[in-house]
Amino acid sequence: PPTGSSHPPPLDPQMVQGATLAASALYQKNQMGTVTTLTNAWGFGIGYESPLQYQDKLLELASKQTPVADTLRQIQQDNKPPSEASLKYLDQQLKLAHP
Image (tube, rainbow, N blue to C red):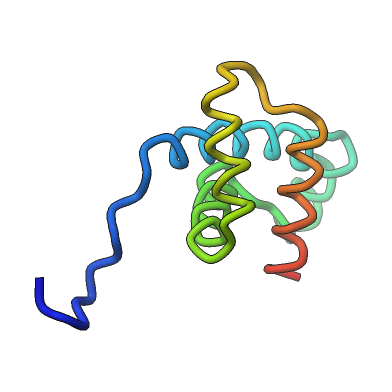
Protein backbone atom coordinates (compact mmCIF):
# COMPACT_ATOMS: atom_id res chain seq x y z
CA PRO A 1 0.00 0.00 0.00
CA PRO A 2 1.17 3.53 -0.62
CA THR A 3 2.63 5.54 2.23
CA GLY A 4 0.09 7.79 3.88
CA SER A 5 -2.80 5.44 3.21
CA SER A 6 -5.97 6.54 4.97
CA HIS A 7 -6.83 2.95 5.91
CA PRO A 8 -6.11 2.07 9.54
CA PRO A 9 -4.24 -1.15 10.28
CA PRO A 10 -6.48 -4.20 10.72
CA LEU A 11 -7.74 -4.72 14.25
CA ASP A 12 -6.42 -7.63 16.27
CA PRO A 13 -9.36 -10.11 16.61
CA GLN A 14 -8.43 -10.93 20.23
CA MET A 15 -8.43 -7.25 21.12
CA VAL A 16 -11.81 -6.72 19.44
CA GLN A 17 -13.34 -9.70 21.27
CA GLY A 18 -11.88 -8.47 24.56
CA ALA A 19 -13.29 -5.01 23.88
CA THR A 20 -16.71 -6.54 23.20
CA LEU A 21 -16.66 -8.43 26.51
CA ALA A 22 -15.35 -5.42 28.44
CA ALA A 23 -17.85 -3.05 26.79
CA SER A 24 -20.75 -5.30 27.74
CA ALA A 25 -19.54 -5.55 31.35
CA LEU A 26 -18.89 -1.79 31.60
CA TYR A 27 -22.35 -1.09 30.19
CA GLN A 28 -23.93 -3.39 32.77
CA LYS A 29 -21.89 -1.80 35.56
CA ASN A 30 -22.26 1.86 34.58
CA GLN A 31 -25.56 2.14 32.72
CA MET A 32 -27.95 -0.38 34.27
CA GLY A 33 -28.17 0.96 37.83
CA THR A 34 -31.45 2.42 39.12
CA VAL A 35 -30.10 5.99 39.31
CA THR A 36 -28.71 5.79 35.77
CA THR A 37 -31.94 4.30 34.45
CA LEU A 38 -33.97 7.10 36.03
CA THR A 39 -31.53 9.74 34.76
CA ASN A 40 -31.73 8.32 31.25
CA ALA A 41 -35.53 8.17 31.40
CA TRP A 42 -36.13 11.61 32.91
CA GLY A 43 -32.86 13.32 32.02
CA PHE A 44 -33.22 12.75 28.28
CA GLY A 45 -30.38 10.23 28.20
CA ILE A 46 -27.66 12.71 29.11
CA GLY A 47 -24.51 10.71 29.78
CA TYR A 48 -25.89 7.54 28.24
CA GLU A 49 -23.33 5.24 26.59
CA SER A 50 -24.35 2.19 24.56
CA PRO A 51 -22.24 -0.99 24.59
CA LEU A 52 -21.10 -0.12 21.06
CA GLN A 53 -19.93 3.32 22.21
CA TYR A 54 -17.94 1.67 25.01
CA GLN A 55 -16.41 -0.76 22.52
CA ASP A 56 -15.49 2.01 20.07
CA LYS A 57 -13.85 4.07 22.81
CA LEU A 58 -11.96 1.04 24.15
CA LEU A 59 -10.62 0.16 20.69
CA GLU A 60 -9.63 3.77 20.05
CA LEU A 61 -7.80 3.86 23.37
CA ALA A 62 -6.18 0.46 22.74
CA SER A 63 -4.80 1.73 19.43
CA LYS A 64 -2.92 4.42 21.38
CA GLN A 65 -2.06 2.66 24.63
CA THR A 66 -0.41 -0.76 24.67
CA PRO A 67 -1.43 -1.54 28.30
CA VAL A 68 -5.10 -1.08 27.36
CA ALA A 69 -4.66 -3.31 24.30
CA ASP A 70 -2.93 -5.94 26.46
CA THR A 71 -5.75 -5.81 29.00
CA LEU A 72 -8.36 -6.35 26.27
CA ARG A 73 -6.41 -9.30 24.86
CA GLN A 74 -6.11 -10.81 28.34
CA ILE A 75 -9.86 -10.50 28.90
CA GLN A 76 -10.46 -12.44 25.68
CA GLN A 77 -7.88 -15.09 26.56
CA ASP A 78 -9.30 -15.62 30.07
CA ASN A 79 -12.56 -16.87 28.52
CA LYS A 80 -14.64 -15.63 31.46
CA PRO A 81 -16.26 -12.32 32.43
CA PRO A 82 -13.72 -9.53 32.94
CA SER A 83 -12.36 -9.19 36.47
CA GLU A 84 -13.39 -6.25 38.63
CA ALA A 85 -9.76 -5.04 38.56
CA SER A 86 -9.69 -5.07 34.74
CA LEU A 87 -13.00 -3.21 34.53
CA LYS A 88 -11.86 -0.62 37.06
CA TYR A 89 -8.61 -0.06 35.12
CA LEU A 90 -10.42 0.27 31.77
CA ASP A 91 -13.09 2.54 33.24
CA GLN A 92 -10.39 4.82 34.68
CA GLN A 93 -8.55 4.94 31.36
CA LEU A 94 -11.78 5.80 29.53
CA LYS A 95 -12.55 8.60 31.98
CA LEU A 96 -9.05 10.03 31.56
CA ALA A 97 -9.26 9.89 27.76
CA HIS A 98 -12.90 11.05 27.52
CA PRO A 99 -13.61 13.36 30.48
